[in-house]
Structures are given as structure tokens and as C-alpha cells.
Length: 382
Image (cartoon, rainbow, N blue to C red; front, top):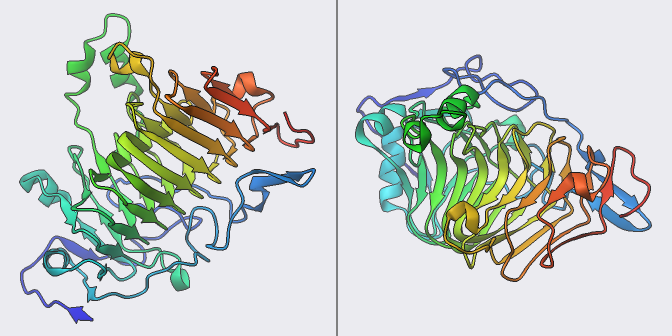
């Protein structure tokens, strides 16, 4: 274990308990970051059993859906233990594949000035784990923040097989900005160029395969909390992702030319919790996730050719959406084209919907919906 000693004053605070007080074990209130959200302490009612079939999201042996207290794959120390910005950079500069850079509980590293002035991006090298200990003995996990609206990427993977675990990662913009969207795209609107004069933010971005993000709390990024721009074999699991709801963008997890496994996350107050550009050879498996109840628009999405304006109707390659629980009244799933291979939607629990027509849009020969349950107290499978 290494401990760096840096004398230069950094833009970091060992936050007091008051500054990082949480409500219901969720979000801190620091310099205008998102207000707390009440997350049910008991998510056991996220699934139902009917005729020996499981419908909705069920926890596994790794711990609770959304991570936190009880999560099984915790990291509680590392090869490098860092407590401020300078130490973090020095550790990442020398860390090798298989090593862990650990930020202790309740440490607050504010990246705002570095991002705003220097266009700084925190790059994690190939095969390295950046960790804190969210959920361990009451820990909320270390906090990384940016309050700069122009945050193209707070964190990037510098190579394959990067892991980010046990952290709180907060962006600058938890708001919907509905009026700005209306001025841009409403009747007589000023258009796309005007819309993008207001800068956007992303949390974690990768162009490399094998990114794992687990047991994190990620919030308040106007474009995407996690942007899987390229690569395959990404695994995003046991996180709480919320308040990424800037109208027009506002994605929890978005995909470019990428594919992923998205499982056992909780989502709330996003525009789309899952989304994709729908380019060929992209897609996702989404299973055992919970939409807690608030969504600006439909929850799970895949764009089609008309969105990309590429003269196709392709909406990704393969999509599987099963054993998820949707509590938001908005449409749960929208597939905006035709997948190259298939989209299957099954064994989900649509709590606020009475039938498939309310729950899913974009059904086609390759997008099929079967064996789901609907309503607050389902008794039959449709």
C-alpha cells in the first residue's frame, strides 16, 4: 500500500458530516447539487412470483439492487490510498493493470476548477480500478464533483477493463430546463445551434471494451451519467443513477457503437435511463433494474435510422429487456426502428401500465413482447 504526501494546496475538502449529510442514504447536498431522493429501504416488493415464474427485478447474491449497504463485492483498500486531487493524479500516473487506487470514505474531491480552466479529464489506465467503499460500515463513498456545466467527460477509461466502484459521482446539472428546450425546438424555435449554446456534461465515458461500473451513485449529468461510446463487454450493475434529465438529452446510460450488460441498477428522474444511437452492432441486455417512479420521458430507448438520418431503419442489433420493474407512468420501452437481429421484452413488471400497448412502443416482427405482468397487483401473465 502506498500513501502519497503532497504539500501543494489542492482544490479538495475532507467534507464535514454536515456538508455531506444524506437523506435516506442517497444524495448529498453540496454547492447546489441534486436534492435528496427517498429510495425505498426495502425493495423486496420489486418482483412477484406467478405460477413459479419471476416477474420484475429480483436481487441476487451480490446484494441489494442499486448497491450500497449489503453489497457483496466491496473494495475497502487499495495499492494506493489517496485523499486529494494531487495524490489521485500521481497514483493514476503509475498504477498498473490489476492495481487499485482507493479514495477513503467521505473524501470530497472537487474537480470543478480543473475542468473549467484546464479542460481536465480524469483518465483511468487500462486494467486499473478506481474505488471507494460505498455501503461499507455506513460509508456513503468518496465524492467526486464537477459544477462546471461544460464537462464533456469527468472520467474516461484510458484502456480496456477499467473498473469504477463504490464512488459518488455528481455532475453540475440535475434540472430539466424545459423552457430552454421549448425556445430551441418549439414553434418558431431557434434550433439546434441555439440549444447547444448551453453546454452539457457527461460523467463516465469510454471508447474501450470491458468497462465495469458498480456500486456507484451517479447523478446530475445533463447528457449522460455513463456514455459507452465504443466497445463491447461493458458491465454496469448495482448503481443508483438519477437526475440526468436535461430535456433533449438526459440519459442515465447511453450507447454509441457499443454493447453492454445493464443489471440490478436503480433509476429515477432521468429522461431516458437507457438509450442508444441504434447504429449497427450496438445493443444491450437490461435485466433486474428498477425504475423508481419518476421519468421525464420513456424509460428504456433505442434510436432508429430516422433519428440518425442515415436512410436506414436500423435500431441496434440485439436488445433484451427482461425482469425489470417499471414504476414510472411514462411508456417503459420505445424501440424507434427495427433491430438487425432481435429485441425481446419479457418477464418485466409494468406497475403503472395495464397492457402492452401502454408499456411498449415500436413492436415489429423483430421486436416482440411476451410474458409480462401489468398493474400494481398482477395475478396473470400477458
